[in-house]
Image (cartoon, rainbow, N blue to C red; front, top):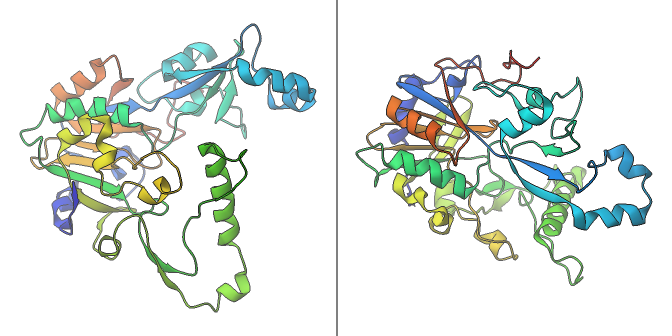
Length: 332
């Protein structure tokens, strides 16, 4: 994989995308025989012999009782179908998570406790795990004449990815000698808090401070280079073999691998491509930053294979599919 300044390699997509947000085609190209929606996994938490407490119940618990629950939680991945079964709703191709888990008006759809006492957490928007991408990529690479040549497009807006002119970096890392602050979640939390603090720090003087170049994960040449501009999104392009993503360890070879985070103790990681296509344009994979599912556009045979894969939760969807939050007309 390597960065390419030749953004013309993505220009073929422009006439296939809509300028409006009425359907999925604002980000998913038209002109393909069939489409599949691959649902991002959710998660479910349970406790042996009792329901997971609500936030209000937690607040009323004595500290000792609350602490005693910590080691008893059982967390596992969950499908959307699992959630629909638990909440008594209907799983279907155009389902929306907040409808599946019966979220009341103004309610929190991120975590919902089902009637059986289990707590379901929403799938990640715009994020799939390397193993899930690998399964999708196995089907993609088998359905192109150019499995060793294609484009991986990464959205320009991911924090820390690109350098920019500013009064301070877009993110920070926390360093501590405290042995109690050693886990990645703690580091991430504190790093996020420091980033927020930096973004509002000394607003009066920042207005007069001369912006300086703040480097990103990618080299300055890439940060200052051209982007593929599509409706409401811009992407950095990389020449990449679709077949390379069949191995979940593709993150180790990604030019956008987050090495600054690794230097602070984080495991190797790289944002998955938001768009992926082969040189023969046989298909396009779209993992939009605001979607809780990944869309594949391609041949009928490809879509059938993806939807038949028992390791993926995927359904065929029609042309002009509406994937907005209000689109689930089944679960009202």
